[in-house]
Image (cartoon, rainbow, N blue to C red; front, side, top):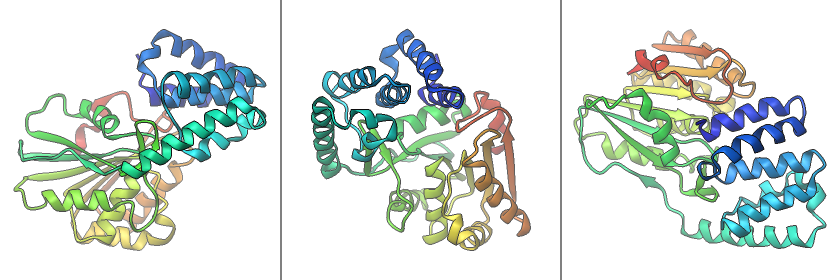
Length: 301
C-alpha cells in the first residue's frame, strides 16, 4: 500500500494534466484502503473535485472530513481557489466555522514533543517532520533506513504549531525551530558516539536554523527534499556553522521536485565552494518524497 505522501505526490503529477483525471485516480486509490488515509487525502479530493467543476462532491468530502470524522484544517487552506465555488454555500460556511474553532482550540493547547527519554544505543538519529506531518510520520519515513539496527536509536521532534488535524507545521522565523535546538541541546552530553539528524522538507530548514543560530551540534545532517528558505538570507551562516562544527552533510532530492531541487543544489554548491564534506544525490523520477529504496541512504549511516 502506498504511503499517503507518495500517493498525493503521484496525484499532483497527474493533476498537472487535468484535475478530473487526478480526482478519478485518487478516488480509486482511496476507496481501496480508506482507513489508511487521513485529512490530507480528503482535502485533496475536495480540492480536485472543486477544481474540476464538481462543487457538490467537494462539499461532500469536506462534510465527511469535518462532520463525520471530526477533523479540521488550518483556516487559510479552506480558502483555496479550488474551493471558491463553495464560498457562498451556507453548508460550507458552517463547516469552515466548525473547522476554524477546532483549529483555535488545538493551537491553544499545542506543545512541542520530543520522544527521547534516555540513551538506549551507541548512536542517535533525530528525525524532524515536514509541514502537514507529525512525529509519527517522521518515524515511519526514516525507520526503514535502520532495518532494526540495534546500534541506532531513532527519536523524533514534533512542532508545537498545529497544521491540521493530527499534523503540524514549522514557520521560517527565529522561533519556530527552537524545539529542534532544545532537543539537540538535551542530548548533547549523553555520550552518544554519533548524533545524526534527518529532516524532510521544512524540517530541513529547522535543522539548519538550529545549527546556524544556536550553539548545538551534531555529527551528520541528512536532508531529504529540503525546503530551506533560510538560504535566502543566511547561506553564509549555514555553511560556516556546518564547517566550524565539522558536520557531514548529505542532501537528497527528487529530480522532479521543482520547488526544492534548486535549493538543494544551492546548498550543495555553497558547501562545495567551502570544501565541506558534503554529498548531493538527485533521485531520478522522484518528486517531493523519500526514495522507496532504503538502500539509497546506506552510505550516510
